[in-house]
Image (cartoon, rainbow, N blue to C red; front, side, top):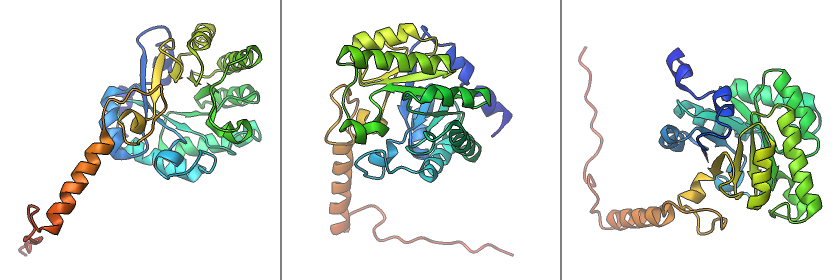
Length: 275
């Protein structure tokens, strides 16, 4: 990467400085083509382990591997020149110990060139976040609905519906903040709790299904673009990508069948070089 592109890319300290200021614009990216389109509009691109469901058709994020995250992270980094790129550490690659987390995170960052990792911030997370940040690895936290905990929690369910759970989510956010997380994703909580967390932590709080009370917002890009028939109810669809693709493919198929597509009777021509 050139010195110029390094200079222009948003940095972790710049993201942290946006606390309480201009909202952070964040989307997921899993490949170079999409990252290239999103880069100019986003402050943060997250290579989320949601790629297991969005790209690979899995039922959850549990089966995502570190190798998968690296492969997709490399693709995004080849195209993104301005946005800060964060990569999820998938299930089973950081929970065992801070040392395991460091090994996973250091490999992800060195193999991709990304700027930070994200971990889901359960009760064990504060020690791990501090261990990583003390060793120069920027960490984004994640509280509320945690997809990697879907097996133990019986699916994807909103959090903070009773006082005990509400307090637990708040405590986890505070612990991640105090441990040095430069930003914290808040997923699947109601507006009052999202506002309370945002006000309680010094790091920017980035919401997904957590109202506009946060310091920024993130969505799964394919949900926002309308690629799937179903999307979470908090998602505003800014496009109808599914219908557009189906229409385009249908018209292409008809042209092929009728041999009516442009260039149907043409073949590649190769000019032989002289000498």
